[in-house]
Length: 135
Image (cartoon, rainbow, N blue to C red; front, side):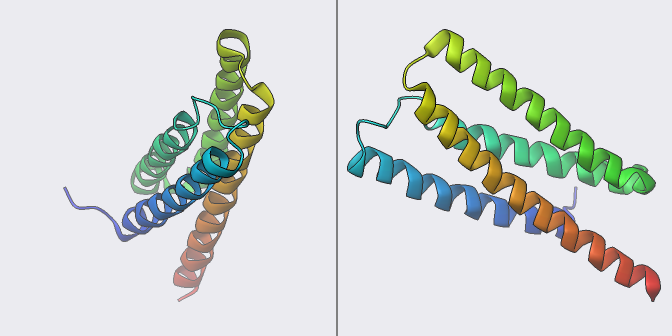
C-alpha cells in the first residue's frame, strides 16, 4: 500500500517534533530539576505520538472517502484528543497521584506543542488545496 505525501510529511515532522521535545524536556527535568521528574514522564510523549498517528490516518481516510467532511473530522479528532487527555489526567490524579502538578504541566506542554503543530500542518494543507482548486 502506498503512502501519500501528506501522510509521509506529517509523520516525518511529527516524529521529529515529538523526539526533540521528549529528548529536551526529559533530560532537563531529570538532570537539572530531579525533584520535579516523575516516573510516568515517558508515557506523555508516547500518548501524543500515537494520537498523532491516529489523527493522520483519520484525516487520510476522510480525504479519500469523504473530502467534504475534512473540517468535521479535524474538529472531531481534536475533541477526541481532549476527551482522552482529560481521562488520562483524571486517572493519573486518582490512581497515581505523585507529582500531579508536574504531570499536568508537562502534559499541557505536550498538548500545546501537538495542537500548534497539527493546526499549522492542516492549515497549510487546506491553503495548498485551495490553490490547487483555483487552478
